[in-house]
Image (tube, rainbow, N blue to C red):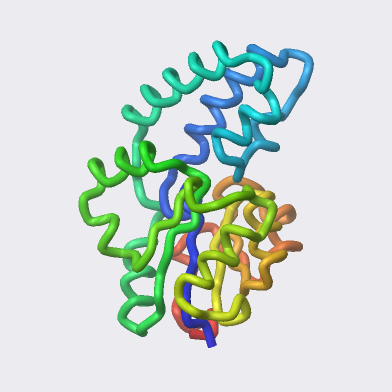
Length: 209
């Protein structure tokens, strides 16, 4: 039985992934014009890890990107993925613990809280990049999420949309629900126990709670 549900943020709870793809696509194509598709490969990585991997020798560029990202996030649309609020409320009514497991940092989350005042009420815990030593696809974040509730990974469900995120859920040993908000079904399905387009297609009866 599932005791805890652990949700990625962008592309799972919030319909923001396409906005980030646009932002990072522009940044990475500017600095790495000969490399195609980097914006897809960094999904699930923290900002620090993106910098360490791709901008380690360019501190001035890191500063510039951070300033542009901060401005971008202040002006983003923070809409819920369809059906999310109804679904998470149903989980909590069943006594299932809920947590956010995101690579986003605390400043980004402050933007979310300001735009969505009810957001925190949907979760027992919110874990951000500051809580993890390794980024997805490493399972560290989901293992820590399960540990928050004293639950075994097999007693938790993980909700993800990105390839790195799905790999992290799988590696952690959680029941995996994949959303096709970012990648097509044929990419998501091999790494998922259950695949849905959004939460309007998902009912409590479909997962073992």
